[in-house]
Image (tube, one colour):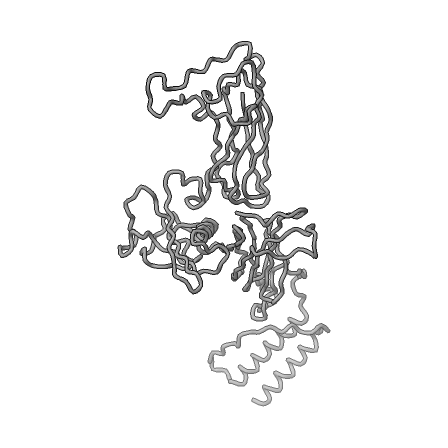
Length: 460
């Protein structure tokens, strides 16, 4: 047996000498130990055969050219694989873990204070799992971030052109924490500024409202924002509702506990209870100030609710015309013969020929602050001061980036400085009357960069 072993070693040595070995180091790879089956051979011979195969494999691996490889750098925001993810063999391909995407959106319900030479600006900073803090865009641009835990802070600031030692953070600021998961998931952070306060909410796509959401029992308090989907509330709308409830409780800008509950008329009744009323229940917000007593603020929607984000994700913006009710005949408190206004004379042909209508196919209005707007459009000449047509449309009248609950009013202002509302009240004028046309509305909140496109303005 010893002679057989020596002869085998001699042959292996001769075989190794006959095969040139690369000067490059051998790339060692882990391999499973072979399973030796009993076939009647000597255990020593079987062991020698295993050694021979292993030695020959190492020699050939060191000599044989490997597959062509191209060195690539990971994309920004994509981490390199951990040691446990290293390739088990030169031909094995391990995909890198894609980072998440962060998008910060600003909803302004009241801008930062306007000062002489100042501009409203909104800033956001992000503290990452590495402990570093960096600025992130608030314009809605997407930012690739690595998986891990983050702290997002958003605040309103005055512009750098403000006279003084320099800009500083205002009282309107807020923050939140979130965890970015690998796989390229989209994370949207929506910050709502209102009356010197701020609420920010994270939408990572994991909890979304369902049209068939089953409401929990009415007396079960769910935490905010985790409970929003249970009441079929989107991230943005839920933040708006909570901000409204804080204002109702007089706690705007103050720390408070927030919980979401069901219809107060269904307390003690099974889940899915629907109380009989003329309005639709949305959610009940329980606000608990620090060291104080809680108060409940239910939201009900009915006629006209389509213009408020309390009731819909895409509130309607109405465009009102003075023609509505323009020809209504006003009467006294007690209708009686002769107690109503006299008929308005018809337009004289000579005056009709001198009329000059106003026609504007399209007009874009930039929204840059909350509060009142009066946008001048132009002038028109009305025959005998009588309005025949006044109309305008909004290219996109259902939206969330601009909230105008009271709608837009198309105003036609007469020479006396008063808007034309009723033909009988304004009266018939000899000759013609020059009128001024403007759009009047109040913005409750807006996203920076939002615009209104008014189309087909006609006044004659």
